[in-house]
Length: 291
Length: 345
Image (tube, rainbow over all chains, first blue to last red):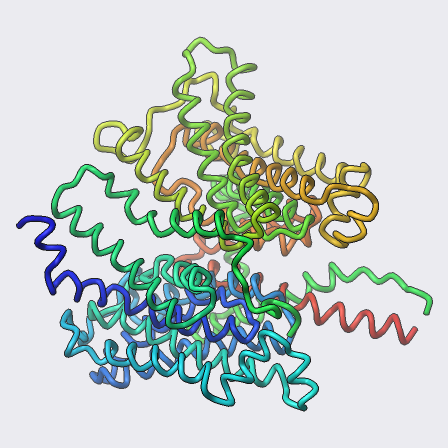
């Protein structure tokens, strides 16, 4: 088929959206957490554990709904661990994130061995399939996009969240506990990121080791490129997904661009953007400071 | 208040190891294994076996390089998680130059040239992260993540389309005179780079504690405002130290390429750059502490492989991540406790 015709097709757009779903959930979760003043480098761990929990729960119960719920719960659990280390004990937020990512990578492999005596793959489970309209996670992604925008700008919780990231001393003066606000944001953001993990494993009907393969880090880059605004972050995620989908098509069309280099395009783009507009980014002023 | 100095570092590391020991033991119990039996098997199988000992030395040498890289960057307050990419850049440079040199090049020239190439490649990556941070305000963790992914993609592409010889995932072998002698039995992984790495750690100890340079860069990390007030150029210091940090990670190629594999191979050293973070934290940023941490973590992972019949080898990988988390959590807790006791005293 002609390359350009295949790019304009409905199937190609559906492929972009399907690829974007894990990024969208992770970037929405990450935006909320970072807006409350906590560096969210643990997105990779939330995706990976969400994917593992969703696949194992669906395999064990045969219910996709329970699997999706387990994915969200796993993301929230990682976030709970993150909050315990970074907020309760005051540990360095960046190192906690990296540590959790390494723990999730080894921990999911360990769990595969312990549960199924398998090195790399979980037993197959029911899948949400390739179609968008039949995929509950597609609708959840739309709901999460609208809800996180609305919650951030139109609710009391969102106001407190933004205050925790911008002027935490105002919350203190108003008698509101900053750590408590951040705890609630981390748990909600973690659950959202965990849903992204559920898409990773349930789309193919099974978990494989390191299935997130850097998507959590990429989602964090999307958050930064979007200047910490959830709706813009979703657009950046769609652009990343378009680059990935294009890469798959180009490989099918046997193009001359080296196939190993195309996946690096979003990373090069992010580097360019932070090089050119680096100082112009405006992170939440309290990001990464204190607990 | 009279300030009473309490050494907190051993306390932090000790607490972290106890925590890792406790978590590891409970996982072993959950799998129906006796923790004492498994721990003993890990340790005794490493110590009593020559092959395992050389594997520990080989792994620890790479970890010393990447650990020193992460530790040095932390001295100026930079979190260098691109040690992984810097190491890969160094591996590529050393392998390409080592294979391109004329076969007659004397060792005294070939080895330093290859090490210099590795250090320059790693240093260029480190320096650009430093420059992006101080000149453009780009957070080093974000640029590091991007550079790690970019370098991994470039290495894969360079390997597949330029370097790998007929259908293998291995580049052309470097010339004989660029290879470092191995230690122990012929063909063992341990090699002379172990001594070079030890020398780097000793040199860094001296620089950090005995020279004005070391004072300047540590002050830049601890109190940049004071460093500026004293007239030092903190931006230049940050870029220079990040270049040196990248060069240290790049030098891991001396061990991986010149010492053992003698070529660029797919996935060579993968993960050891990230693990350098654990090594630097466990070593509490002290170069000699980093050497000790590299050896301990290497014993843990080689021991985990040696005891793979008892518990899955992934357990020891998990414990390395637990050690990172335990250290970073123990840090503020122990500091809080010791300042409280010193105030009371």
